[in-house]
Image (cartoon, rainbow, N blue to C red; front, side):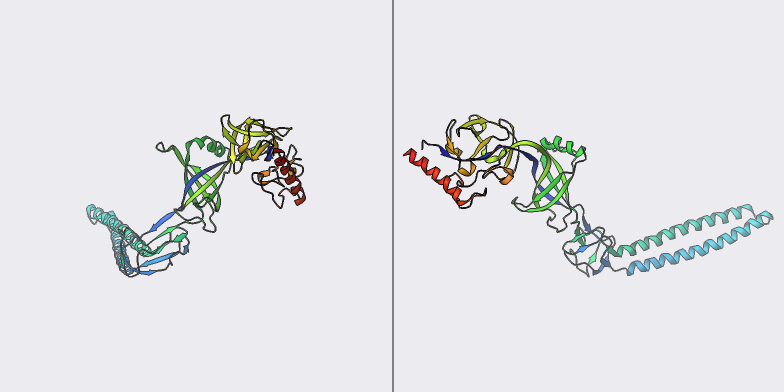
Length: 400
């Protein structure tokens, strides 16, 4: 076809570009505790239900306390006996002190009695420690949750004899709220991340599912690791999420996006306008006479369907976003009627902001410009689209 090519254009405009770091992460609980018995004995009661949420201090299980109750009674008896012996020894000591003052007994007998009093005092301290140890064993028989979290599957049933050497313990409790995600990111991102963290900025983090399509939770970046892994050239970061709905589960694989920074008031165009070839990265720039010119550009950060242009374009420049596959430098194009009034800022007929805030051409042309749309996204009526269709057919007849 030698006549003008139908194309769809967009207008470069000032806008904001989010600099986003994407990484693969693993959901990691802030606390994972294997509850083990600290005392040996028969497990007489299990008070939790698998999968329930328990709070710190909640009763979980009971070990038969009767052997330890008997030991406590024995040590308390020894303590009372030794307290009585100490009291008697102190009475004799006071008596011997008086007799020595009267020179009625030998000094050696007084010294021996004083030593006996100290011996009984030491025995009482030992008895007190044994009593406290027996009370501690009694407390160990009553097993409570050390943290708030979700209870896993029960590892042992009531009636079994449990010991401190049991590897699996009684149950595993995992803290679910809040929860974190740990991800390894390229070390190249470290300067930008540290710069933002040192200013006290709060960096939002969004977690997506394995397919990177469903948004699971929103949190914040809390910290970076203290060293780079030289084998992979990455550094680990931790992001924390409230996880009120428990959408994140320990050891779950997620995709995370960290909003590192935002570039304000930069020139942006749709990513679909960018082409790659001999000049490098370039666009087809629409001239006032509806011809196109190859314009090399320097690309900046990309955000969704938008890209920042560091050089090569100015706000108000019109670039081809559809139909560029058959264009060449200097070729003439025809823009649908709905686009003909696109102004420098994307205003005018059909220039209402499209996705990403661009003044996308709309109306008669859809896709590569060879199919008519019944409803013009830019607010055009079917009649406007018909004008553009007639314009298109006119050029076909000219070719013939």
